[in-house]
Image 1: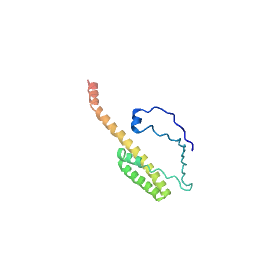
Image 2: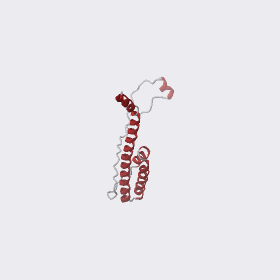
Image 3: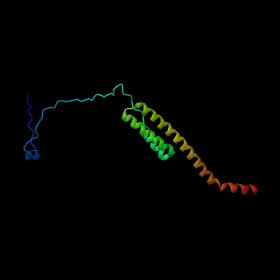
Image 4: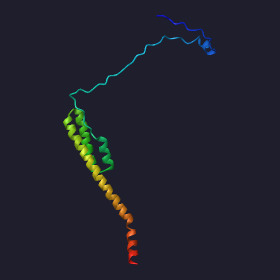
Length: 136
C-alpha cells in the first residue's frame, strides 16, 4: 500500500497536549447493502381482515349486544388464521363485518330517536305558549 504524506500544519496547543496531530486514515471502501423483498409463497392465501378494531368500536359506541357477538367473531377469525384454516377465517370475518355494519345501523337509529326525543322535550314548553296565543 502506498501512504500519502500529510502536509506539515502547525499544531494547536490542544494537539500538542494530546501528543500530536490526529492520525490520517486511508479512504474506506463504500459498501452498498440492499434487501430483497421476501414474497409469501404463492400457495398461501392472504389472511382475511378480522375487523377487531371495528368490533371494539361498535361494542363501545354503537349497539353493544351486536358488538359483543361481532367481537367474538373477530376473535374467531384471528384464531382461524393462526391455525391456518383460511376458509373458517373468511367465514368468521364476513360474519364480523356484517354484524358490525348492523350494529352501526342500529346504533345510529337509536341515537337519532334519542336526539329526536330530547329535541321534542325541549320544544314542549313552546307548544303551550302557542296554544295560549291562539286562544287569546
